[in-house]
Image 1: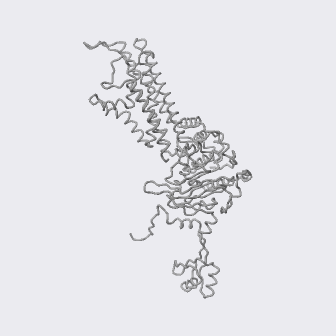
Image 2: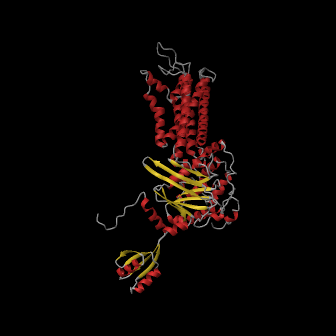
Image 3: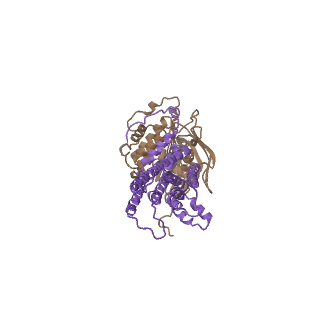
Length: 341
Length: 290
């Protein structure tokens, strides 16, 4: 957030856990999970969209909810909100099924789809109706409109808004009830870079205030700079549920690219040292399991000339893709250029 | 677009739960009112239809006035012509117009939530779906009932004032007149509720409107005639047959032919259509995933 007060200065209440927002989300023993999902299952005919999913989301942190398209993220979010009825299992927010609450905005703020509005209404009318249904004063509508930067556009029809403006409106709606739990489904879609930065800052601040922030995305890169914890699913099943730091330590591998005219000789030497060597060009290989420094020493000892010695750390995006590779619902087929059909 | 640096005012980040006021049904009514009022197309449909319905009735009676003033002699052997102010002043054309407008309004307010996806936002804000639907039903039912009463009383009083000087005008106290006026008004919210039920079941714009038209205007053509009693009975229990029966002037030769329903029968039929529509809307909206 540019300017403004330090949000952490406001969170001195007994129910807040500013310390819980630690990068990596290390052990937060005393923190009670707010969203509890237990063997949650949703089937549509023969298709199983969500399959025996079990995880919890804790307060005071931004939890990223990752998975490829069709992994069941949106279905899970709809079940958290009681919009879809689970085929099996249970989901509670703050200990009770959300659908059992008469009014929702003060408990959970949600942006499921920026398109879940009526294009014929103005943003102000849309938010006023929502606020009124939950007995939230109309003044709060103006506050959230200013907060998301829609103050001047609030009187215009939503139908004329860009996707980014609709995302902002959806976020405004989620903030209306000042809720302790916030759910966002792909909130960064359509936002300009400045908007993305703003949203990240907002999520960080909401978490710092002790709220539970649960954000879905199909892009690891989006979560890398926002989330403390990650819940990764593929084909409706849980793949990973851990802190961002643990996730990257476990999944982001470091490899070294080696180029030498005497590759077979060096490869043999490296394998003897326990490294994994994969040839990818006649004179070049990718080595994992040894540091560049150690490879250099070995090359010297065997009298091998090195043309290249580069350390490459695979991004979390790569890690995420390899982790979910088996569970991509709609894989694209690759047709290498020039290949005869 | 520039982002403001305003900080979100913490209403009560420490204990949001304790700050929650008791839920009130009137808040939902008010919210639905804001939603209805903020979509020009919906209330214009009803306002224009009401105006057109009154104009149709006034014009019908107005263009009859020269014939009343200069009646042509009846054919030999027939009794002199008797003018029926109910038949002309509460015409079936105006009734059909109000029926389709109110039915569409009811359908739009329900399928509009589904086709736009707004329904997810609505139910995430108010998980008590039954309360939301009840508020919608109450608001749409109330507004269309008001429109029905305005058109009905307006048409009756204005047309009969025009006829008073010709000594054929009726008073609301005359036999069957209050019943006709109330029946003419009551079919309007009934059609709105039927529209809401169709919108809730079909959740699709074209399908909802087409089935509304089929139910109101096509089915009566298929279930008519006096030959088979069961066929006719189905026809007389369709929604718009009730208003036909209730607006018949008892002091006229107009009838619905053989197997015509009684007045009570038609009132009950209308009530059942309304009640079943409300029940279907509430149950369907509660049960289904959105």
